Amino acid sequence: MRIVALAAVMAWAPALARADSPLLHPSQRALAAAGDDEPPPHADPRAQKATPARKAEPEEETPIYKKWWFWALTGAVVGGTVIFGVAAFKPAQHLPAACDPMAVACFGDGRPP
Amino acid sequence: MIRLAPVALALALLPACDTPVTYSYFVIHAKLDPASVDFELINRIEACAVVAQTPQREDSADLRCRRHFVTNDLGNFEYTTALTSGAIKFVLVANDFNGVQLVHGETAPLEIQVGKTVTAELVGTAAPGAKPPPEPEPDAGAPAGPDAGID
Image (cartoon, each protein chain N blue to C red):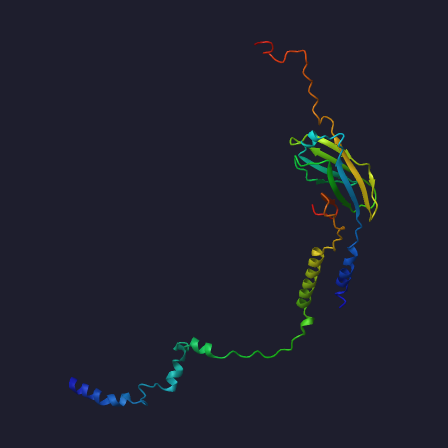
């Protein structure tokens, strides 16, 4: 009896292995019924990186001189320059006439201490 | 452009702060009175200086005296002031090694002549107490010492 069953399975094996066998490829209705149980589709990160970035669509930009930060920056630079110039300004020194080289001492206003 | 107008105005006004200065000069000849400051006193002078007394402040300068190298003629010194009015008096002092004043002299107040040079002479004389009192001469009749008369 066992020998007969084994022989039957071996006789059916080529038929089961065929590509269009309904045993290995379930029907469309069976697939639709089992759709909720399928795992989520696998997303390959390498494939995502490889996809080129979408180009930003050109927007209608306002001119730079109409932006508040442009004038704030300009004012800061100009104001800082003026403040620095005023702080570092030294009027031209009016020095007295040169001393007599034979003088033993030469002192007073405009003379080095 | 309107925003930069105050900045340009401020920069244009900066040179207005620069006012010219006119100096006045004094050339003073300093010397020691030979009648008052003898060689012995001169030889004790360690340092000498001059002080200019202005209406606002006092300035001083070293006349570069070196002991044993001081002569009666201390040379000329020059003083410059930006003041436009008032008078300046110059004072000469000379000290010994211990800081004791040996010589003193001063000029009369000299009027400032704006933009011009005033010349004057500053004569130093011996300061009171600079010279030690002369030692009393030994009495000719007194014995010379404790051993006098002993053979």
